[in-house]
Amino acid sequence: MRYISTRGQAPVLNFEDAMLAGLARDGGLYLPEAIPAMSAGAIAALAGRRYEEIANEVMRPFVGDAFAPDEFREIIGKSYAGFGHPARAPLKQLGPNHFLCELFHGPTLAFKDFAMQLIGQLFQAALARRGEHITIVTATSGDTGAEAFAGLGNVDLFVLLPSGRVSEVQRRQMTTSDAENVHALLVDGHFDDCQAILKDMFNDFGFRDSVKLAGVNSINFARVLAQVVYYFSSATALGAPHRAVDFTVPTGNFGDIFAGYIAKRIGLPIGQLVIATNQNDILHRTLQTGAHVKHGVTPSISPSMDIQVSSNFERALYYAYGEDAAAVAHEMQALKTEGGFTVSQGALEALRETYASGRANEDETRATIAATRRTAGEILCPHSAVGVKVAAEHLGSNPMITLATAHPAKFPDAVEAATGVRPPLPNRLADLYERPERATEVPSDLGAIETLIRERIQR
Image 1: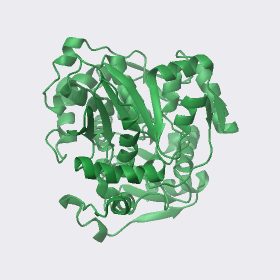
Image 2 (image 1 turned 90 degrees about the horizontal axis):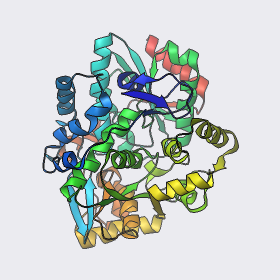
Image 3 (image 1 turned 135 degrees about the horizontal axis):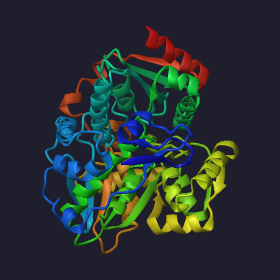
């Protein structure tokens, strides 16, 4: 399996090299040269099987010969062994034809555990085989799963976290690691600032090569690939491929819903893919008007969605523009230098054929949290509530699955304000507030952060 850049000017790599590279050297994002198809019979055969078995069947064609079959199965088994539910991504019914896929039973209580636990194991296996040490820098809007790399001797992990713009639980999950190789950096800025610094690091080839920089944000296709699996596990549980299934996805950096697009291209019969945004609604506005223009980030009670530069939207544009890498590179340059661009009419029509969208403001989010607890007995985190509110506006004849992206206890203040109930942390994290924090405040400055990273590595 060969991987190419959305901007067309980077070397073609295999799965392992693309995974370790993260961002392509031309600034683009890696995608498979061709998306493997799965027959209806093969999809039907996934129904009722263990999550790990489904993961192997779905992901194996994308991995190629980078990992031996037995090795890959063992890696998958290790990745999900620490999840708190035997189904890994269980479904709960909220109402007629509306289901919630709970993606918060992993170690850090967020959907990113599905990807980070896997990618941590993949990195460890690849680096041990190569005998290499790398530096991973990741920008997070609140949930990253840093413990997947904690204690690995061949990795230093630096997490860029927007200071004061995530919940206390989210912050503490990043800052209370006692692993010497995990470094939490609290950046004076918002997530888009952190993400811009990360991309600038990858484009600083002297720094990138000297520290052997790698990325595990959702810019890394291995992250997206891991998220494809729960589309198959949940859809087949509701009758796919014999019936189509719709999905609504709370969307920030666009990786989770882009995974749904890949699932559809593989052959899963997905009807609607609904983008759910909070008040930072650049993706919803783009689909409505065609203008992809940044309006600034407004803090919200769903902070992981407080984003105006959704990195994986570049992958969606690549397919919407008919795989025209030059057109994508032009639009991404306009976004960086001019703050936005207008999607061509043909590309906009292609996006609208694939995605629907909706938004929820703060009052609507709180009201949805309260109503869902009252009618279904389910307590939602604010991000999942945004998804449920938007999904309700798009219910049709197909079953609708809303992805519940985080445990409500990660956002106790918002949940308590909406319901009067303060959700407790699971037992394995009950002492989180007592753990000592270890973090470094840094300015939103590329040079200063690069200097700090070099010093920490040398130390």
